[in-house]
Length: 388
Image (cartoon, rainbow, N blue to C red; front, top):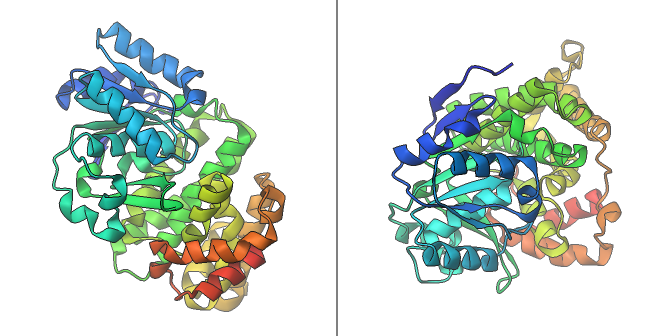
């Protein structure tokens, strides 16, 4: 399965298939990179994907530097340290290897290599994208998870300790020049992380589909992404060596990121402070908040949720659209249970007394502004309480 390499552009040029990582030297040549900085995290550095990339670069005689200190929720300090190494090593491009955190830092490094101001001044909400005229040094993205889709994204999400929240750096110039999707690099991902990152992709697809921005092309991509996740995520969690499931989950994650150029919704606004304040994996945070958000959105999203219920195999032809929409929420909760995700923020170290402060931070986050149903700060607090 997936032995034959597929290459397509949307618009990032994507190389997909088992062994695709062996094409990294070719990608570096095509994008004019002579000495890359490999950006990753300590876990990946100690695992097979890093060994595979190192071997490919070594065999091709490509000199490179390595920054392997990316945190699970990447910080501005991660970016600054990686950029210092990038400059000191005279690198001219970045290879991001890992989950969304490593890929986001990889993209932020090429920004900081060009801009002297703090990343907070380049935040999208502050109009920073207008100053990010590019072009930046090339980024080649090699994901080892199937969740964020950062390998085809135009943004980098970084935690600012000074602001006490995540900031979004956004520009079309941040799209990686190449994305290498090799299902074999995701085989070692543990079941819990497979489930959490997979639910990140699920939330991307669902929130972008229901987002009220008109973009029928993204809608179509989001719908098929959901179909793939419903079909393959449980298989990937049960058997990490299931290459078919791993490969299709990589595709679904990429589709989710392509789709959410429409924008996202309230689940993401709720998830971001949970990662910043309590270190929750972003995909897990999305999963924990999603059922409550779906109930909040149900009346506004009846056609979407009814179709989602059908994806899970519910007999929607025997139901009214409203009944089918309610059934979709039940199916998502059952899906989480089958994936082994323990529901309830209380079970993940989030104290109830922290919810009002979290709601204030969630309201500052821009994602809820494109939720299918408008949200107030009080609404977001109630959603946290329902998720607790």
